[in-house]
Amino acid sequence: MDLIHQFLNIVAPPFTFFSLLLFLPPYWTFKFFLSIIFAFFPENVAGKVVHITGASSGIGEHLAYEYAKRGARLALSARRDTALREVADRARDCGSPDVIIMRADVSKVDDCRRLVDETVNHFGRLDHLVNNAAISAAMMFEGVTDITNWRPLMDTNFWGSVYTTRFALTHLRNSRGKIVVLSSIDSWMPAPRRSIYNASKAALVSLYETLRVEVGADVGVTIVTPGYIESELTKGKVLLPPEGKMGVDQDMRDVEVSATPVGSVSECAKSIVNGTLRGDRYLTAPAWFRMTYVVKVLCPELLEWGFRILYLTRSSNTPAREAPSKKILDATGIKNVFYPSSIRSPEVKTE
Ligand SMILES: NC(=O)c1ccc[n+]([C@@H]2O[C@H](COP(=O)([O-])OP(=O)(O)OC[C@H]3O[C@@H](n4cnc5c(N)ncnc54)[C@H](OP(=O)(O)O)[C@@H]3O)[C@@H](O)[C@H]2O)c1
Image (cartoon, rainbow, N blue to C red; front, side):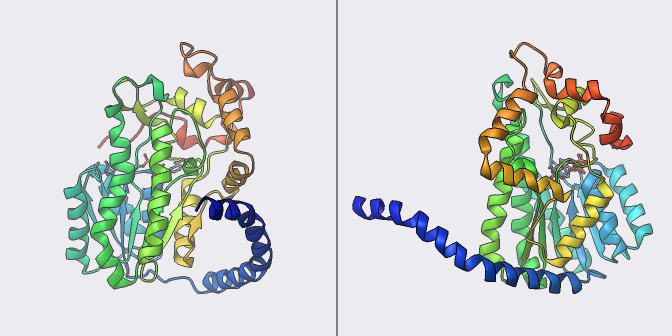
């Protein structure tokens, strides 16, 4: 057996390389023509039923407006009731013929079952499920005393999508529908202080890539990996150490986002809905953030080194706001150009 593996260790790399040389040109040409056809004939969602989790703010809220503009009927869920009502009213103004809202916490399995059931009971079908709800965190792994305080990250970001997708799948198969999942560029970027958030987003990619194999003949899967986008998350809303309580920390946000341009939420939502209707398998918004993936694949050490030098402080006793990433932001004054005005204040919706 060892001999077989030794043989494959020698033969597999050149075999793969030369096979790809032959295979890639016709494969890419085929994919290119296919993408042109789908760009000219996108799915029409007028009258179709879309459920969006985490629709009370940010990207989820603006996805509701984009689907509404295209005439979709909407089921919107989140935990903040008043905010959901306001989004629903605006979605109706944008053109949705029917919008219902439901208060649900996706980290609870019964809430996820209920949100799918209520959608199907009201509309009689489900065409698109958008798994968008998530929370983030800002803590060094070793800075956490009680690690169980960080379970809500996985419970919301990963299990919330798992539960909802499981209950929705039969309905999505019946309608030959689509799943949209909001992962993140953090699924491949090893940004410090977000280890568990990053892991939750990487887990989503793995889950939905596998589901694509299992159910992809009937249900489309679009995996979205946004870069930095204006929302409550980029206002600095995170679980904060040591207890893991939700709060807004704009200094920490500055450390993390640093001098990176933050994208418009309405443009991001528009490109997600357009990409989904075209049947895109992967989508990064703004698209230039995809280049970070190329860097990660070709020279991962460069990314690790960059994050270490720029985002960490010399000693664990030095506050994070002393990190070079924030100093660069403050010294250049580039924040006024790179951060949309909507994320400069720490106010978030409360109810
Ligand atoms: N903004 C970015 O730069 C960025 C980058 C990469 C990926 N993303 C991803 O994009 C998605 C949307 O985030 P966002 O940036 O728009 O942030 P956001 O404004 O904070 O929106 C998050 C949404 O999730 C909901 N939510 C949080 N916990 C929930 C729970 N337990 N049950 C149900 N709903 C819950 C929130 O509503 P309630 O609090 O009312 O429940 C809110 O509507 C997330 O998956 C995020 O990871 C964002």
